[in-house]
Length: 88
Image (tube, rainbow, N blue to C red; front, side):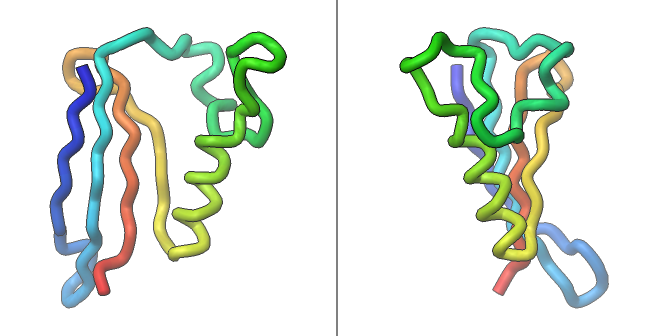
């Protein structure tokens, strides 16, 4: 199951961020590779089945927009990707 939630939160006084959380209860991400998932060309798929660029492109776009993206585990061990961008 994939769930997407969005919020606008106060980051600092007078400064807000938009936060989007994509949560997934599907196939797990092994803890041994969690620290590599944003690396360019890193993939767990067989050669020719994926480029390993999706998360690294997402990371680059978030940084270019003065934001961040990170991975965390939810309260029930679901995988969560959290995107935070400054509110305009």
